[in-house]
Length: 228
Image 1 (cartoon, rainbow, N blue to C red):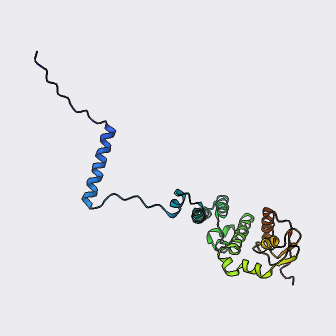
Image 2 (image 1 turned 60 degrees about the horizontal axis):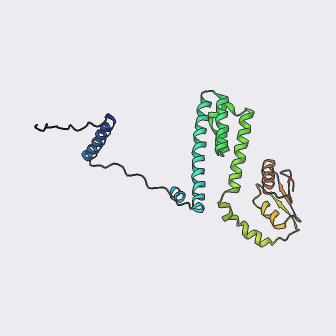
């Protein structure tokens, strides 16, 4: 009996696979036509490299810097939303957006008060409270910025004071407590520090810092601005 010839037909690729192949071929042809090649993946950022290498000490300042930048961008975006809401006459929604912008890091109270978008809100109690909170945040940023240590050299000041445990000292113009906390630690539990300032909001903030740090040997004192 003669052998029967059998011809095998190649199987057709499934439609999804065929579509993918065609797409790749078309992309390659287009790249060759205009003389370009597919974009290479972007190199990792310093933060991504530090995280991948588990170099946490190097990653921390990079992560903080990235978070600060992202927070500023978010605050600016919310501020724009607030302006548009205000121009549309949506008072409550505009104030809601401003409150969120403040929480995200908005701190330029001067620009806020001068912005014509909020002209109809300047007498609103909620707007005034927000403007006050924004002004306080801006002042705190000024007092606690990283560059301040380079200008005022607090560590050198503390070494020059050479305080001993048990001493009593007053921090006049205590502000946000840049020196108050250092002084309280230097004189120890047996000593005492009186933090004096004319700004009630700053002293309230300082009270919170002292409590968080567990320093019970320092107290705040509010004085009138014209008190000699």
